[in-house]
Image 1 (cartoon, rainbow, N blue to C red):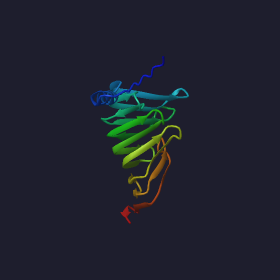
Image 2 (cartoon, rainbow, N blue to C red):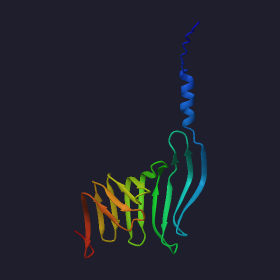
Image 3 (tube, rainbow, N blue to C red):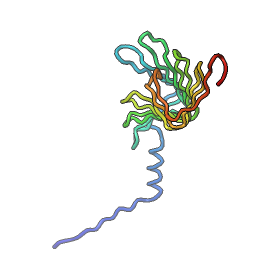
Image 4 (cartoon, one colour):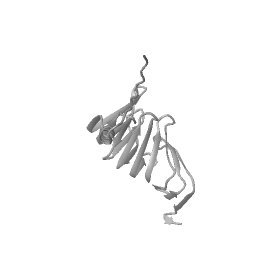
Length: 174
């Protein structure tokens, strides 16, 4: 004698919503965090933030909902540049940091200050970039790029697309 059994699975909408909500809760939270990036025996960068929310569910990411500051150092531990933002997200799988809202990147040696509302950093290429408006101020003028920007991670070199600017020549604005 043969029997056929049919089985169906029905998910209760409330159960699905609870599961979905559980994935929106951080698995770890850190307050007043300082993270140092060390390479070849010296600190290359130091990240400081009031709050890190780490998610290990579907997406492996760290959120910096209250902003962050990253200071880059030379081998003598002298600060080279500083990057600040009011919000950030690090995607661990793609090794990419996305910074939004009042992003400021300062190069102390060149006296360059870059302002934008979106900046991406890809760890594998060690480059920062955006396709949004950037404004760069330095002792020689103010430069704007509506078409994007790319730089190395410590902001010692950079490249703009679609540049416009005001330049200081003989202490006057031209």
